Image (cartoon, rainbow over the protein chains, first blue to last red):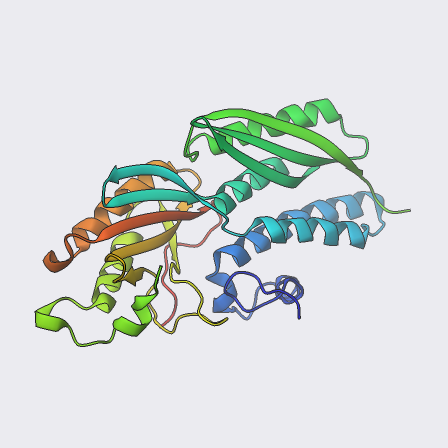
Length: 181
Length: 124
């Protein structure tokens, strides 16, 4: 049986069908689940990118590539560890989930034209946060420029939300995507 | 953490103590009233593959120590650290006197993009 997303009881395939239907009729179990909402947001960005590519080249986007991207997204929207933000007193603490920060990084990176974030890794070490992300760059786009833009976008997005000072953002371009022949 | 919010929340209060269900409701109300919070998420863990039947989002435990956990989505334009601290203070302030010693944890579960909906609680 396919694994369900969050506490929604729905699989990635079902979530994809729900997205394709325009998220109507509204399914509360999906719309009120943090993991589902993160996956839907990624689907929206991926859909926008593939639409642009298809409009320009009038050819379909490689379906297995889209599935691979969604599979990575699905694995990274999980809450993961709770990273401590602040112990206000001995009985009160605040935390942020790894999933929340990974999604923020992904959203910031995907916002740069012609790129798509792959994997996002966070490392909290010696009181500072390091981010390493992989990136797919659309064929023909300037890689170094795009990587710099992604790094700057991630810095700006994370700054007000990190549980510790952001020390380093490493960007690895590990994929070049294009329209299938 | 033991999940007592489901088993305990409809028990009769002992000696006039405020029941966990009411504590959770107070916490939920405090969460959505805090600026910067886009929505609350269910903090209670799933049970046997299904969601807890309670309509509340906050997770109230009695053992090993009394605790309240709330899970929130924060506006990406806000400062998560400040919002979480404000929620913690609001939840603490919303606790009845007989729950003054409760442990409070605020979990930032999502940092929400601008298109996210207004604060809302799940339909009863």
